[in-house]
Image (cartoon, rainbow, N blue to C red; front, side, top):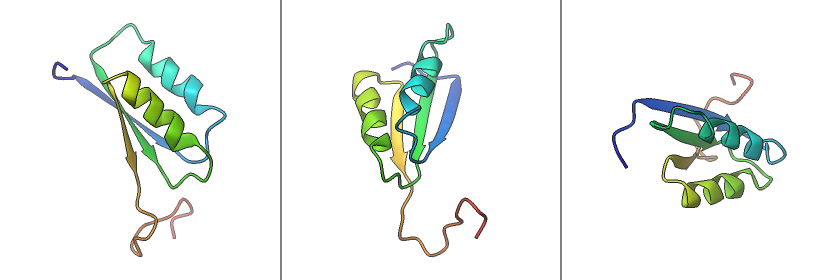
Amino acid sequence: MSPVSISVVMPARNSSETIEAAIESILRQTYRDLELIVVDDNSTDNTAEIAREYASADERVCVCALPDDDPERIGWNGT
């Protein structure tokens, strides 16, 4: 993979119904020199699995997962 000039960070949590459309939208852009970093926030549905399928098929996609046992982690509501 050549060096990328744009990084797109997509946070995701329990978004299995919409994540495919979101990923497809980014990957179908006419500008191809990009990377997509999907950050799964401890989804309880199959969001992470869907994102990993894209990552295995397209080298521009990377999937990361936030730790769920970090006591200093700030949640969605800021606490």
